[in-house]
Image 1 (tube, one colour):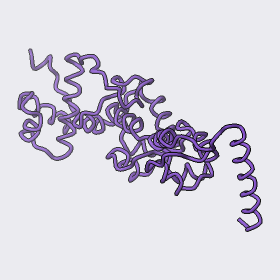
Image 2 (cartoon, rainbow, N blue to C red):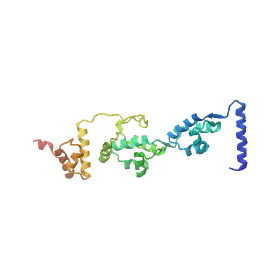
Image 3 (tube, helix red, strand yellow):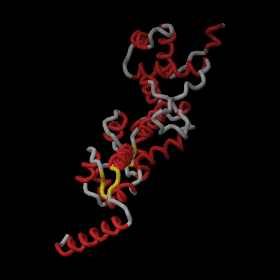
Image 4 (cartoon, rainbow, N blue to C red):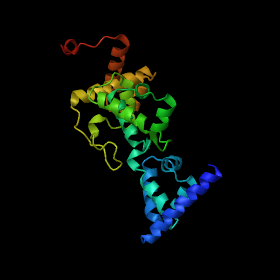
Length: 252
């Protein structure tokens, strides 16, 4: 900014301050109120640099306000208060984490979800592991769209379901679409699976563990002896041979 422009801006601002004084305004705004608004913006995903570039208020001034500056110039306060938390270019990662986990529980691998969203392998695991404070709003919206398209359709990956179950990740049935982004929302327990559903899930677990190279005895230990060794050996044998036992002939 040239010296002449700076002088012009100084005269304009001095004139504005004079007019406000004549109207009974001090030209100062309560600092804690502005700081609270700035903190809400930061919590919603804004960065200090982002607030500065949007409002035209320097990062230094923003830092002083957040540090407890008692008053803020009227013009700066007006610009800062015009920055809306819900217009942040970034959002908290919680909703994306829940959607990725739920899709995994439904049978969609983490890498598949990342590929569909255009998210790198490294970044999607950074999101899942909680090592990023915010997610780009456009990426979060892509995760939400993938979730909307696939939440009601079981995915093809048994290992993904086993992984999600082992980590205790809730599936889509546990989340309400209106509250999945709410930090205070908790997953619902959901309905209890019937005997056949539980057996199918257990079978997938056994096959996955066998595929990973575990012996029937090791699989039984991993399952905390919830089934018999005979059942484990039978399922492993059927998986290896591709031939399912005819229960009716055995019973006869």
